[in-house]
Length: 431
Image (tube, rainbow, N blue to C red; front, side, top):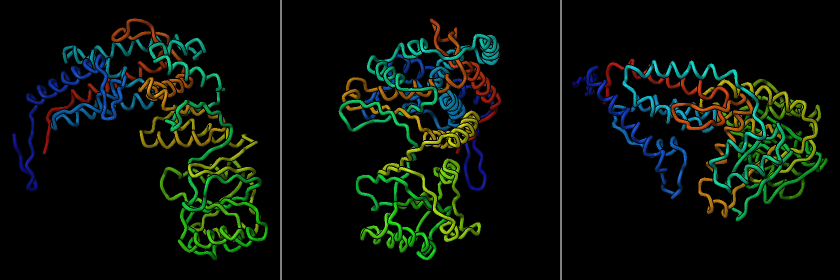
């Protein structure tokens, strides 16, 4: 049926036909999941993925009229993956089984599975060393060795991070300093900047004129001490003045511009709380010269590269308080964008980090090494957080596996929500 409103023609699929369209779409999804289980996708970069969800999201092309239904399913899978690493595949495999049932029996089936999952919760326990081998049983031998070597360098507080390296061989780097992924203003650094007893002035705003930081520059000139200057932005004449004086050796000031994005929203307050220092906010009436006259605080040794700034911190008491607060936020599952920002913030607030840097040789031996280790790290974090169950889901598993303690319940709740939403659809309207 066609309808015209405000000069726009809409296609309306009525209830009876709508049910047929939805069932056809669900069976198409079922078929795709079944195929991708046995035939992993090879993407444009000739990389094979073991992840059913990764492959499905990249390869699926469905009719325009089922876009909203597709989004309901895909978004639920993404939410599972964001909360518990690797769980989107489990979600899709159970979805495949559920779609195979008669449409009138699906909700009842999911509800019964959910009740069984709740009973399993009594077997919840902490993740132990012996469980790691069970988690990585199906991994490539190269991935297994890297994971085991990385974990041998970890403590319960360690933050694991993986990256692709330009080097030929792998490197597992243990870092025990505080690192923020912010870069100095372009043109101010050649190589790296390492200084002891560094002073710091932070401004939550734009430095509009040289006059605003006259007292700060005078102090830098008089003492010749190294200083960090962190602000949201600078006018060109301010940066020009700092650059010229740096070049002549009259001052040693390294400026950072944070911008106004949410990505660095908490950076000033985090640094301030960690080192017990205040930052100036001109919009709130703070005068930069007053902060300078009170005395510019020192934060010890600092190392700066074109990628980040590293603080050699000794007292971590304040840092741990902030981490606890941010970890509580991370448990709330606030959505993809917020969760990514929280993850980056936690990364910056860790003084105990192991960086797994994958070299070109390993990538050649095992093209999915990054995917396997990344999934392991995210599962490992969720299992440390929630505990584990050594169990199986009768719908997809032949033998017991290591599950996050709430993983199966979480997935079945998402499936319940998906099928309730789909059942409530009475018509589909497309342009």
